Structure formats: structure tokens, C-alpha cells
Length: 374
Image 1 (cartoon, rainbow, N blue to C red):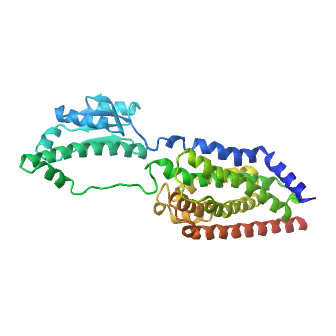
Image 2 (cartoon, rainbow, N blue to C red):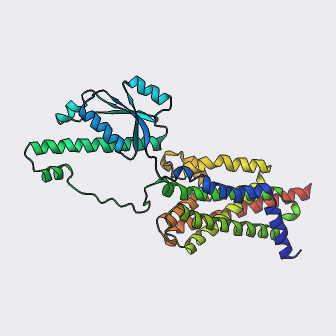
Image 3 (cartoon, one colour):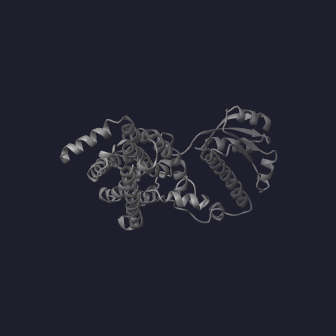
């Protein structure tokens, strides 16, 4: 069979398979729009809370108004008691409630620091952290007003009072995450994982469904080439159009990204070929890839600190291409490290190419010998 006919036959086998097309192409396009959707506003804002004002003074009402004017918090309810606020929270009317103590204004006027309470569901750590940030901003502002006022009453000039309270000015400029949002932080890393997992499923299913006659070295090279070319196009779509669509920073040049993409995609294809050989069914490949996604995300170190993950899990996950690829693409695209800064990642990915190719051909030869014996 000529090379052209072989390519044509293999391409038809790949792109006429619904499972492969849905996994490799449909999955990539679907997740490109679905996953960043909750993060499009970059960070949670206008979280609904209730205020329990036990002080009922002008100062406590001023504090509640300052909380309400913050970008993070929206006061939608007033509760007469903590029990009423709890009921509002349990009925999902609010995401938390603020308690202003009865001696709030008295302590503030005496120059003391009153303690306010906040209750909410800390399992939603992004929402909880956003509300606490808004409360701290409002609390810090009103506290600063009264400290400066006390200094001015004691005879300190206003400019000197302000300077003594805030002795230095900070010029806060984010270097890599200009919007300080979750799209810039989470999506670039997850995109790499999506490319890996969808390609693993597609390659594994195709390898599992291929016949013995379709596993010659020539067939495997053609299969490898088709998957590599197709995934490069999808990856360029991710790192090109979708990065621009979501306004994600990209410091790496197209050539630098391509240099890292080739060993990454190659290693994933070789791992997929190996999984297609060792796993019993196509369904088992899909299940393994799906159930491994969450451990990979949390062990990668960009969502959850890697130091808090058991070392045995991180060691296993670093055997996968994503262990080097995620870190490498973040350095290249988000931090502008250049190829010199990702040499370790490149060498790690090429090492995995060699490892997966070795494992695949060892397994393939064993299966061939077993078939000859039978």
C-alpha cells in the first residue's frame, strides 16, 4: 500500500470514529468555552450579605454603609438578631452575615479597636475570601479615620497625622497577572491539561480498536503523524485565538511555544499508544483518563500547594507529560522565561517520549510473541 493511501486510510479511521472526534476535537472546543465561563468576571463581586447591628449607632450605620459601597460586598438584608441572620443564611438568601457588636461606637471613639464578627461558608473559599477582603477594607478605612482624628485632636497637624498612620506609599504593579483575576491564573494551566486528557482518550481508543495488521511500524508512524498534526492545530487555537479571546497574557513567541508543544504532544501520543496496549477496553481508557484529571490538577501546584499533597501522588503525577508541560507553558507564556528558562521542562518531556516509546514497543513485542506462540 502506498504512503498516500495509508495516510488516507488512517485518517478515515480516526476522523470517522465518533468517540475519537468527540474526545479530541469536540472536547477541546467544548471545554475552551465551558471551563473559563465561571471566571470571566475575574473574581467574585457584589456578594450578598446581611448585617446584624447590635450597636444601632450612627457610627455602626456608617460602617454598614461603607461595607455596602465596597466592590466585593452587597448588603441586601438587615437582621435584628444573629438567629435571624442564621436563618437567612441557611435559606440561601445571603452568602454570609456581619455582626456589629453593641460597644462598637464606644470603643472606636475611645481609640480602641472594636471586634466585628463575620460568619459564612468557608468551603467556597473564593467567595469567603472576597467578602472578608471587602469587610477588612471598610474596617481599615473607618479605623484610619478615627485614629487620624484622635491625632489631630491631640494637636498633630493633619498631614503629619496621615503620614504617621501611613508612613510609606506603596506602588503595587502586578507583573504577570495584570488583572489579578482567575482567568489569567487558572485557565492557561488547565488548557494544557485539557489538551493532554482529550488527546490521551483519542489515541488510546484508536490504538485499542486497531487490528494487528494496522500496528506495523509504518502504520504507527502515520498514526503518530496524524495525531501530532491535528493536535498542533488545536493547541495553536488554544494558545492563539482563545488566549486573545479571554485576554490572557502571552509572552512566548509562536516559535518558542511550538518548540515546547512538539515534545509535549509527542509524549502524550506515545503514552496514549501505550495505554491502548495495556488496558483491556476502550471504556477503561476513558475512565482512567477522566478519574485521573482531578488528582493531576491538584498535584500540579497551581491550584493547591504541591507541598500539601502527599509526595507519592506528586511523584506519580510527574510521570505524566503534564507534570513538565504545565510548568513549562506557564513560564513561557505567562512569565516570559524564554526557551532558556524551560530547558528542564523540554528535557523532561523528551525523556518521557523515550520512556513511553520504550514501554509501548516492549508491550507490543510481547503481545506479538504471545500471538505467535498461540
